[in-house]
Image 1 (cartoon, rainbow over the protein chains, first blue to last red):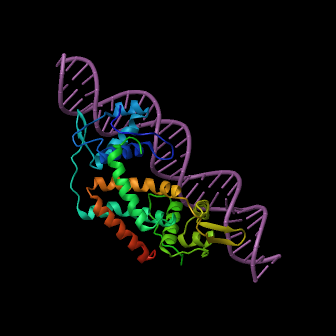
Image 2: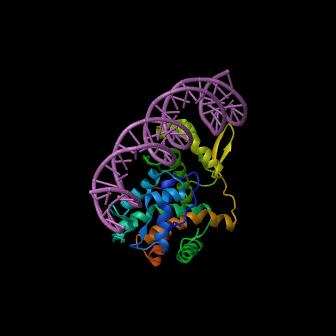
Image 3: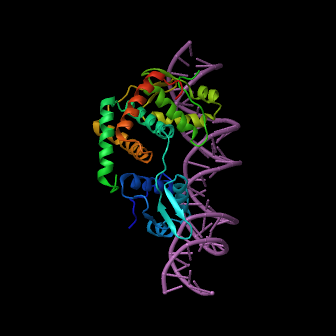
Length: 132
Length: 132
DNA sequence: ATGCGTGTATTAGTTCGCATAATACACTTC
DNA sequence: GAAGTGTATTATGCGAACTAATACACGCAT
């Protein structure tokens, strides 16, 4: 059993879906710093996907600083690096913009939007990466 | 001068960038219901992009319900259709999820995240689609 | 030392989406 | 009828995504 939830669907690259699933698992607490991460071949077999595709996901997760590679041994969830306030803003800005625009089109007012955000924060912590 | 702001950049499909720009313009008030929308050929010439690419954006905007086509005459910004609460939630859920996950990775606490969201709401209304 | 399990690199080939190009057609308006 | 709309068609080039089959370097346990 993989330590993260993933239901492959067309439309988005597989390696991106893997990255997203791992990010979700880490954010929700399903995966914690220092945890052992499954091998490329194990994930490949479990998902029935080409090893190269999984490798691409691992490479991206490593460059994102989410995974630490211990050569010849395996991968582990990395200790989160501290980011500056500026970096935080830059990472969140595009997501915030898309959210606000979508809310405007759906005619969702600001108060409701804020409430939805609070609800989502609670949901993520509770579900612990069960599905979505 | 196009009624929406767009700076073409690689990495994302051009037609998607156009759709995004129009959505932003409508959400910010730069474009309003009933406004005339530039012709495919005009946009094509302005952006120096193939007419087919613009056409693809127009088609998507139409299917999204953002544009109304008056055959043989032109396109206009559509009157927004009412959406149910359920539809609102479904449209916002994935964006909320990605935002919360990204915030968790950036170690941004909930209170700060809510404040950033409020700020983004204000920013969108003020800038009126100048840049971003 | 040998073998197993790690991550990683290489090369090849297929499929598919994006963008371009050049036309052509149906429609409305003046 | 001419000009300006949106739309459809066909063809081509390009690159990303995925698969496939190997091969290599490293750490670790027997």
